[in-house]
Image (cartoon, rainbow, N blue to C red; front, side):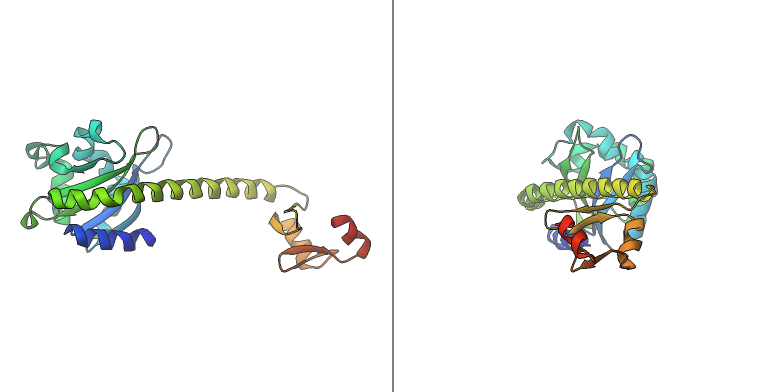
Amino acid sequence: EHWNSVLERLGRRLGASLAAVHVHAQAGDVEPATTLGAWGRRIPGLRDYESYYATRNVWVQHGAHLLKPGAILTGEDMCPDEILLRSEFYLDFLRPLDVRYSIRAVLTGDPEPLSYLSAGRPQRSGPFGDAQRRILSAVTPHLMQAVRIQARLEGIEAGRHAVTGALERLPLAVIFLDRRCRVVEMNSSARKIVEAADGLKLERGVLVALDTRAEVQLQ
């Protein structure tokens, strides 16, 4: 949602008709690409990019050697028009979206997954030029940092889900506390005990023993 609002403001400044942030797949990923955010009237067509056309993107294929983090690249920088305009990528994907010209900022690259912000517009709008390069150059360092922060948060969340899944498979009640006895994580067996107030209860997120002697031990 935050990406979408950023992309709308940036897309309008660039004079684009659509804009998106894509992350290309690594080994083991199900889809060729994922989209972190998108803006434009023809956004539903971008689902086809994730599932198929990311592997047919002639800009990425022919300009792979240029895809360095921080690079600002137009479609013309990456692939000759004679190749683009005859490609499946253009004829079956870009043309129905009414996209002829593009510009992108590379946000991450090898050894990290390739990610970039890409903006496109129709033939009648003409190619992107130096003014649009300057706009993207000014914001790209901030976008690069945002992508890295998001990737770290997603990694932390994935690790937490893995731990939670392991805890749920245990036959015992397990509760993780911080130094102030605030609950950090607990499995469903522990949750049932706490909800039933069967010796333990939560008060504003703090684990409290109902028995005074047990409370002393808990502290």
